[in-house]
Length: 470
View (cartoon, rainbow, N blue to C red):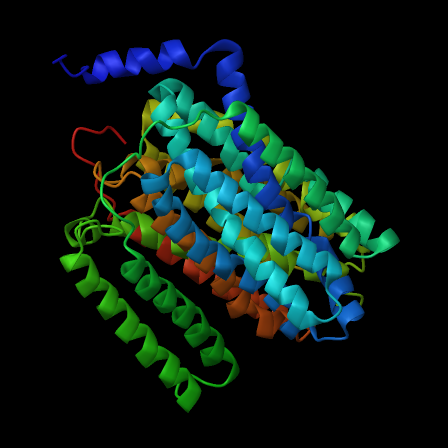
């Protein structure tokens, strides 16, 4: 019986297998996978006001087009990425992309808001593309290449160079918002072809055991009820009966998840890991960072820029060009560089620096809300601090800090922090932004700043994984 290969030998095998053209095709295909998902978020953002007008709904109600998408993303990221440990990364990606295609077709055919929201939920479930791709990189690349490649994929989190935001606004203005989904569908089809052609077929499952579906269900229900609890708290009041019902249901779901995980032979993530400072502060930092910052870039500033009364009065295309494109374009260069710097000087330290600079940017927007060019400069700075440093390091920590017996567990739960955070962030600020007043925008910014400060506090609790320099 042959002797098992040492970790060093295994690392050398990865370097020999994935180099040159093979390495480029692998990374390029994974980039295309995350682009296919991200277009549904960044490309649609400038079209939100047009969707509200087309569907004859309020800005507050229209926010569900984004918030439900990210809520579904958090659920899909947890379940489908962990499922990939048992069925293989390639097969999981194909399932995710097929779900994305079905949801996109529903959005194209939608004749009312309900049908559009169903399509958006299916699209959101494909958020697992990021987590699966990150783990794929960790398993196939050496440490140095991993940081840079992860940064490239993370750059897509902020949009495809920002041109997708501009193109989305342009398509929406000229042909209606459904034309955006037609472009996205074409990208999805191309992505599926590349996955079938370039991603390697796994000969066996990554981990043994069976998928913990009961734990997945309990966690999913808990996350959904958490989101609705917060939304109802703002709209109906924190002590309203419906709000308290959501709170009680959420607590029951999370307690059930805890006990299911304690007894499961193949848990979503073992209880001892959930209690560890290697895990829970990473998730809370992600959740709070996304809640605080995402809504500013992808909701508050976008609507402020298009507000004819107290804002800058821009159309959708110009709004995307000025307030989505720069940060995303800067992020394309900042994220890979951030991955290299974090690998050299420490992932946790770079994460904290990213949060601090992002908070400074948000304060700049708050103090100079009426100045278009100062807001523009502050959003551009977020391209470095948020799209670059923060997103790259928090994604990297999600992979690096994950338990060895469940490599997709923390990336999946951390991905839920992205989706829930984005959904909560929009839910928090939407009631104030929808007022269309300077006071409403100011209140929304204060909320985002306070939550971002809490994210920094959470990051102070992160402890490096044993034998891992982070």
